[in-house]
Image (tube, rainbow, N blue to C red):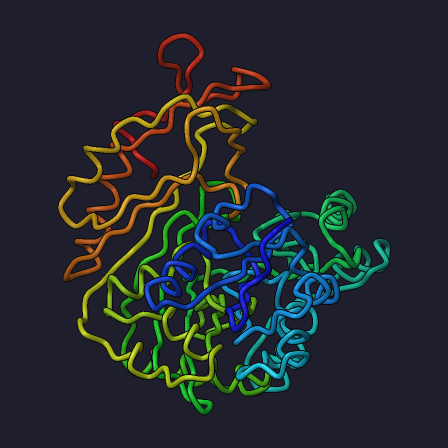
Length: 428
């Protein structure tokens, strides 16, 4: 007979590797946790006091499984899928913090465009529909190139860049295959500097703001590197004020949110997408490295109804960045070994090396954010110092991957059947 679930535990909706710091922070504070994830092999399960193998989307099933156990609070990390359940379970258990229902609108990319317009923020051309013919016809009247993607997608799934109208049907078909609602959005591509902004709000004002530059994997839509950005103070203030305005429209008064935006060639900041939650891709570690703040600790305190300001007081003013490591192949492979890890850890400025895959694991092409297999974190007194450290470390650390499908797509061959990226070129 299984042991009863702990009373007054923190329910954590999600047990991916992104959630591990959340469980670790709770354990350091002596807070018991119940993890919820549909995967039997969810990497954060071992860090929880109890686990429920249930979809985080199914609030009723989670409540049924909890039975007589009454949680002290409910929390979600970097997971869009669990946000509706965060709201529903917070209401059900009268949790100290209830995730705002209005914020769920941001998960619909078409609805987010309308929210941006309602806030008086400059936008750009787009068209959306669940009818594939309709969205293709509307998109053909926009200015090319276009980005076609699921209206409810995340993690760069189902995204295509389209340069001419006759490519629209295939792109729409691809996006619909990754959409639960079967709805697709086509957006005009905005040329400019790709940025993200993270905020942690209290009473509607951000008490922790971080603007970051993004670099994408060559030829793709997945983020490869994220690092703190240098903006003139006036520009930083304008971007922060607009992000706070969007949070207000989404009902986010307290807690985290982040937005993708492009600083256009005309100097206008155009908001592309919203993630009304904590950032993924190990961004909380970047915040700690740059500012000494603990957004994970603040989130747990918020979920338990405790004061959280002290977690967000900066203790340093540095720069930081993360480099996400993916497979060197564009086909499925088996990780054989990690090479250069010890050397990468010794690079001045590198403060953390995390490996999410181990030898024998299946690794997939890095075309989705969930396919990353490792991460480097660097910190330093300047943007240039951080960039230099990441370049040096990423040139050293190499996943040796054996292709499962075909050797013809390998980047480089070393030994019998092993594919590794060339050490001299690094990840750039």
